[in-house]
Image (cartoon, rainbow, N blue to C red):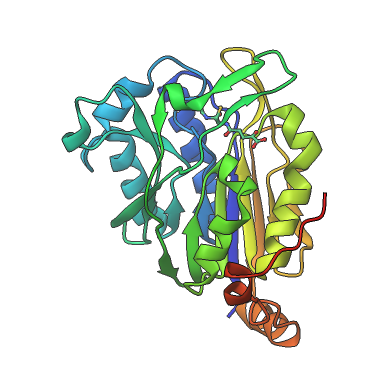
Length: 286
Ligand SMILES: O=C(O)CNC(=O)[C@H](CS)NC(=O)CCC(=O)C(=O)O
């Protein structure tokens, strides 16, 4: 059964209220156009602000206003929401000074199913106006994966920089995942160099759909994100992409029959030689 998957491209500021209005408008648009699953971008509620820990504590349980809004919108529009990322600090970690960057997932009845917290943190030097990124200053790494069985397929969220770690995608494929969602805030510089290639590579090597919801444009601290939100099919074809660097809804059909047909015709996932590679002999002449 083919069904609609949507990714939202946003330009989030450091003002929560305006961002939530932007997110709600785009969710409404996507639902109106028939989306069954909607993916929000990384830091959709607040980006490049100074409120990470404050939001993380406010959202420490499902009564947090942002988590409540996502649950309400999912039920109201009867859509699954892959909730981008928000800062999150569970009560048991309340003494910590850093948060998790968490993607909360909601089914179409508004039930919060769980969250994935970003594992790989972007401590990187980029030749842009910000230069030195140190995500680990504000965030801690997550330590689990989340997989949900949705009406359009078995789906898992990862977040942004995770895209550069192919082993993480393989771990998900080993559990039968068919759609990998990537809430992101790729920098304009590294996005221009790698976003398209990495998104297509992950889709090709795992025969999965890739749904990248990216931040776009200029943000509160002057940093620029790449946009180019896109949906890539299991053959590596970009089947839907943002046409602008403005907030917009990008949608495509997911066809699981085609995904499994492709995996059958090119069973590379079955041809893996993990066992051999684990104990492989290596001859190194220098
Ligand atoms: O820190 C925050 O406030 C929110 N998090 C982000 O914007 C994160 C870390 S700075 N951005 C990325 O991970 C970009 C990855 C990327 O661009 C790449 O892998 O090339």
